[in-house]
Amino acid sequence: MKIVVLDGYTENPGDLSWAPLEALGDVTIYDRVALDDEDEVIRRLDGAEIAVVNKAPVTRRVLENCPNLKLITVTATGYNVVDIACAKEKGIPVCNVPNYGGYSVSQFAIALMLEACLHIGHHDRTVHEGRWQNSQDWCYWDYPLIELAGKTYGLLGCGRIGIHTAEAAKGLGMHVIAYNRSQSQAAKDLGVEFVELDELFARSDVLGLQMPLMPFNTGIINKENIAKMKDGVIIINNSRGQMVVEQDLADALNSGKVAFAGLDVVATEPIRADNPLLKAKNCIITPHMSWGSRDSRQRIMDCTVGNVRAFLNGKPENVVNL
Image 1 (cartoon, rainbow, N blue to C red):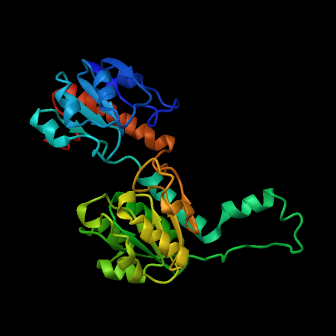
Image 2: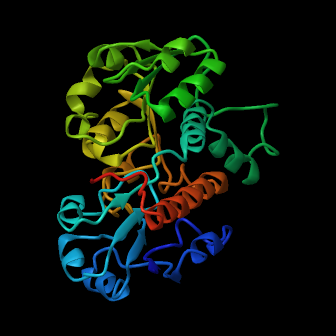
């Protein structure tokens, strides 16, 4: 089989091995692809039978111009870059990696929360700039330092990642509440209290977004729902940027209604220069990196190789469109 990796750098910037995939066929690896250039994608997939993609768009036009394709496997959980309906029409299974980053993503959510409460990065910069050595005082802090024990962590979404986050938050002495359409026994066993959506907004001291993007939650962090939240709430989002109406969140940060936001995702990625959150007060933004630990990416590699091997054996796994 001719296997083409369309945009491999994000998954493997050099610290993993493609050898297990290369053992399964004739593999061509491209590090990057222009995400708005269908023609480039078509050229790269010329003759390919298996496409391995991350963010490269596999549109209807791409599929109609790549007649040899027999499998598409996405090196991520989300598969919105592929026109799965068209792929289904053509009998092409689309596979994903359903579970790989639970610990890494939840760890990053907690790190964003701790930064919001302690401002470690800011104070490190002041020390390196010479402020402590020239200070009249033995110590100082420029922001209120927040102790989390006894406060409420609200989870918008309590699947695999949410459960890991809940476990960590409870380890910090927090009470955890969650809104989720299904209520897992594993979460209940941890002591997670499931509540309705408005109650989640009203009670959370920290609100963490850890839910896949769906029609009902697109734009759910908006001025109407922010108004239901506590004054001084902290909002953490390392799920999907489209869940936030960015101007509304920026306004709430600038007014002080929202004390702090820690974001690893934005609505349009890479971030645009005119994103209002770039100039909002008390907002940390990182470049969609919470999934990217080596351990997490190794699990992606292992599962992707497994998806290709299962297809070659006639028993496709992790198929999202058939």
